[in-house]
Each structure stands twice: as structure tokens, then as C-alpha cells.
Length: 481
Image (cartoon, rainbow, N blue to C red):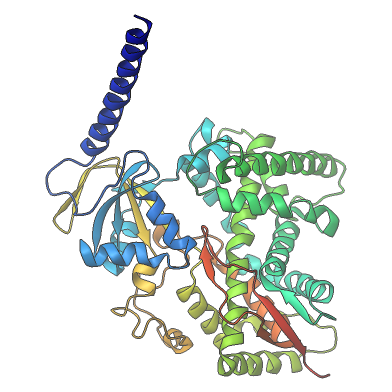
């Protein structure tokens, strides 16, 4: 009798699991039903094709996920399932133009749940609304005219950075040093924070945050997502202490209302006369610090990589930068006129951004049903545009694997093909800031050193940005005075 009872329980359990799986598969498949949907594969419930999407990046070839499906299904748009969402991947210049031109008409920005949970203030409204507020606030600080006055500060910090981290060393790890440089700049220009010991407190938490912010939103101990949430909480507490002290300093006249973005946020109200609360400001500063240093540090690292591999490219950058260095009086800092002379160096940086874009792509969401290239895109579907679908495509860049800065001479690449900063209304507002910090880095680097890679075949991984697996160790050869 007892044996029959347990057998019945087992059968009930198996039936429940079977029905649950059937329901999940049915619900998953039903999300992809409709006339004229793009061709493609949708994978398993919840998981979809997320593992394949991320794993090609972990193996160093994020473009493989895109190009495999472009050749199998459609060269312009295919369906898939990413991060638990039905999605269409848009590929090529025409698709980029369509998405960038239809912002807030047919599509709007979308972030995975992982992003919303890492930034709690966005849960009160939405990450989209928070991003809009930031975009209204940033132009005063991040447009070229405003940034000109920061070039001297950037140069000063770069000189200190190279003196403390690179000089008098035979060998260094480039990736962590690049992160220190760009994070030091972000802390100084956004928060007026300069104490190296204080800045160093953020190092490890920001590494955890960067690797977990775009990940499967599984909040279990030890997962990248769980570590990212803990890291963001720690950073937010540190930022709240800085914000509280700044409010006191502003009230006492010890801080300037215009000295940085933090002061501006504290003293700016919306159309209703409401000031941002401290937690909102902490979240926005956190987002700026991520955007202000993570992508640029990856770009600086890959500039070092390619200059090591291509001596003739290094020679061109060195010649340009030394002409600028020799024109300066002793102790004179870089200025806007110097930056304008760095044309070849910026072409080299752009070619690095083409081959190793820190932003692999971004998500949008369809706010209405629409037709694209004869395919139906349902309202609510997530849309992903991929930088590599043009950057590494021979249709737009002949011999796409060849490093060729001349692609950016004259009028440069065709519109909507070179998109390391996105495009349209949502183009990265920090584009000019990134250009300046990269060029200042290149100037201070090449005028001090030549170098060679310690690991000639070091693997590159993408998680979610490209990075060398072993942090790019190099041997340094200082120039003789």
C-alpha cells in the first residue's frame, strides 16, 4: 500500500514536470508565431540563444553569432531569443539607419532586467526615463567646446599616471593600467576626486560590476549578476558619502557650483522645481563612471596591442606626437590646438574602434508593430543592432581584417557603417570625451616608450567588452632622452 502511495506521488511529480515543460515550450514558441516573421532559430525557453550569443564572445569571436545567422537566415534581419526575450537582430548599414532614424517613433531604448536591478532608481520610473534625464544634463559638460578646458587636466593626470604606473618598470600589464587611467580621469572630472587611495577603493567593485551588468539575471550567490548587485551597492554607499560631503562644501563655499557634474546635479532642479535626491544622483554618477572609463580603457588597451603588432603604424603615431611634443615649452600642457593636430593618431584609434568596438551593439524595443524588408516585427519585440555586422563586413570595409587607418581619411567610411558610439538621437554623449582621453593617452605613451608583447598569441575575450585574457603584458623600452 505504502509502495503504491510513493509510486503515485512520483507519477504526479513527473506529470507536473512534464506539463510545466510543455507549458514553457508552448509559451516560448507562441511568442514567435505570426505572419512574415524574420527567419531564425529561437532556442530553449528562458535561455533562448543567450548562451551561444555570450559564448562566442567568451571565445573571442562575438561576430560569429551574427555572421553565422546572417549566412543561414538573412543578411539583414533574423529572429532569435536573447536574455529571455523574443528578439530580432538587425545587421548592416541600412538596418542601422532604420533603427537610429526611428528612435521614439517605432523603437525605443531597452535594457535587460540586469541593468534595471543594478540601478535601483530606474525601478522608480524606468531606465529609459532616467537615461532621458541624463541626456538633457550632459551636453553642457561633454560637448567639444566645454571639454576644451579639461585637456590640461587630462594631460596632468596622464603624466602622473605614467610616472606612477609605467616608468622605471621593465614590464607592465596594460589592461588594468588603462582602467586606472580612465577611472582616475572620470573621478577627477565628474567628482573632483583625486586621492589615489580613495579611488583605489572602487577598483575591484567596478570590475565585478562591469562583468555582471549585462548577464543572465540569475541572482544566486557566486553568479556574475549577484556579484554585480553587491558591487553596485558598495559603490553607491561610497558615492552617497561623497555627495553628502559635497552638499556641505557647497553650502560653506568650499566647492564651486560649476566645478564638475556632481555639483551641477546637486544644484539643478527640473521644470517642477524638484531637485534630484541623493540616491538618484548616486545612480547617475555610477552610470557615468561606468560609461566614462570602461569603454575607453578597452580602447586604450587595444591601441597598445595594435601598435605593438604593427611597427609602421607605431612609427606614424610617434612622428606625429613627437612633432607636437617638441613644439611645447618645458612643462607646458597639451591644449586644443595640439589635439587638432593628432589627425593620424585619431585615424589609428578609429581603426582600433572598428576592429575591437567596446560597444558590441545595443538593444531597442519595438513600440509599435512595423514591417521591415517585408518582415513583420511585433510590438514588444527586442531589437539588437550589431557593430560587427558592418565593421567586419567586406561589403563596407574591404579586407575587413586588415588594419588600415587610411579608411578614415577624407570623408571616411560610408554613413551608418562605422558605429562604435551608436548613432541617431542615442549616439553616445561621451564620444568627444572619449576621443580626448584616448588621444592624451596615446601622446603620453608613445613619447615615453616603445614596447613589445610578452604573449604574442594572447587570446581576446568579450565579456561584454573586448579584453585580453591575460591583461596584455608588455615589455617597455623607454626612449633615450
